[in-house]
Length: 478
Length: 158
Image (tube, rainbow over all chains, first blue to last red):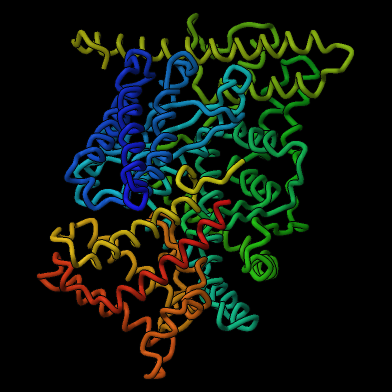
């Protein structure tokens, strides 16, 4: 044995063992526990990727250390599939999510599967894109293209403590926005570019004045910051268009307890991993407009009139969310990055103009979204939300909106979500430390009623579709 | 915790693995004693290096076309490391680069362009599958630069 040459062989052996272990673990997963068929598709994709990696022909030009390193990143993808189980993910939620997804995408070409994250939040991940990225140092591009076959696969990660997270479901709309942005990036960035035509040369000139030698890389990184911020705002718009005021409340709840006046930038060694988030108060300011919060509050005053007096105040509460953003500042991580101070100074200097351009950009995006997709506007009616709140205050399942018929009509996903978000907010803001047990019981009831209402309303709608199909002579649901 | 580059994940691990795979491909191209042919992966990794350097020249402000068009910077593409690597500072510090063609008094940009051209000419040759045809001198300089960048990436991983 000679470790001048055997180190390489030993790492290759470790890599091959890891490939076998991962393939075996993925193959042994019970596909009956996958929430949808897309998890099975993702599993097959990952298993096939590992099979290609262990192919002796493909191994010849590979650096074993690189292979071993990439296998650790592939492990993260494998874990997503392992956590994609009906044990943790509710069927009605997945059904509604799939329904929304199909509004936007051809499900054969752009798929989504569902997994859970340990964080108390939601996130979407470009599974097939990451897979291709992790493979590019160890497989030739032709092999990678043949593997993915041009099909995009996304993974929506749901909060693992799901039952306690129902009112944050509205964030799923924001996460889907990222996939829409990816699919329509050219027209969306074209519009952004048009809105920033006057600002970009000013930013470049400032960097040149600071240090001409570093002006270009700093400008390039700042350009990614701008695109990333615009993408977040676009996703907020999509979340708002899909979920209405519930998304506004959801984002506000995420911001509870932290400074809402900070625009956050995270630099990375590769430009594509640079992330930037506008301040919460600017985001809430933008959403307030697109969710038509003021109109919602005005109409709610009338439609919530039959509720008990403490619930009637919900009509005004949305308008009290702070949305003034004139005191925004910029923070950047890691602060040790050589470009950190320069980028913060320039972004802070141009922030007012950038925010104005972003607001104009969102107007363009709203127009494009209405042109591309059929989205109901407004997504919820205050009358429906009022009826569901009336049921909630009496601990009755908020799944039916009364009509002239005895049966009523099934409530929509957005109506249930908005009513439950408002009702839960009412409980949280009126509860007291002396009544902690009652508060816990009442919020528990609301969460269970919400989950059940999603399930029942979905079945009712499927039943209505099936019944409609029968009337038109088909034995299968339409 | 003992830092372990090989088992790391995240953006810096992506950079490390990117550079290591390029270094490995250059090493295979320089292994003239080997009768093995270069593969498509080797060619793609060497091409990735020329792309990194080409973008590095733009990032260094030395190329004539600076894009102020956001379409160039949309997030969907493969990772680009040039703007963060500060190649204009890193490359001249590599001794092999300093010594290469030192008598001709060429500037940084010209020397990097020559390295890119040599590598691309090799990739474009029909016989580029054979290591014996690789431009040894230039590939050795390129390898020294890449290995220096790998050291930096390993430090960032800790």
